[in-house]
Image 1 (cartoon, helix red, strand yellow):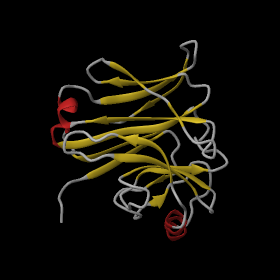
Image 2 (cartoon, rainbow, N blue to C red):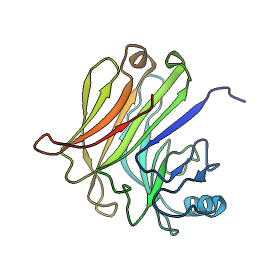
Image 3 (cartoon, one colour):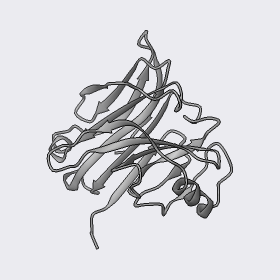
Image 4 (cartoon, rainbow, N blue to C red):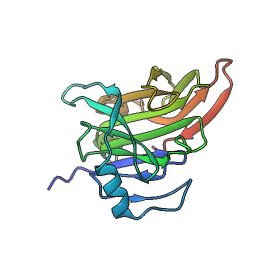
Length: 197
């Protein structure tokens, strides 16, 4: 068995965290918790829609950003190797309130750790509402990086997707994400979420 650790940090009001397959439990923010078995069944029986690519980086293979709208009323955002992969990192909110009442739905996942020097892959992904003009990532070394916003299929909603992948060398050089910030067209801050990293 691999000793590599996997961690997923959901930011904002994410209702479910799944790391290492479907062995997760719902931690509801917008609704009462679902039964874990019901949750796993709903996820397994719902088709995912790919909304963005997470590019490969060196030996790290390409991944994708996927959305699921389950029959049990959840809106889920997953970072995964493929639509059918059990290796899903991310979370869910109520389909009635997909972003949990915030301008951003953010998920930060990484393999390795807990020391930064031991992290082998880290990904920051999410969705932004239509009134968000810019999404910035604040790094521990003081750098601010703008994340390109990508349109998603209209069936998903009026959102924009963003993805950012970090290699081990970047993290060791201080490119460690500490917060994600949403700005409107005038530059006014709409939301700020800490990564906890």
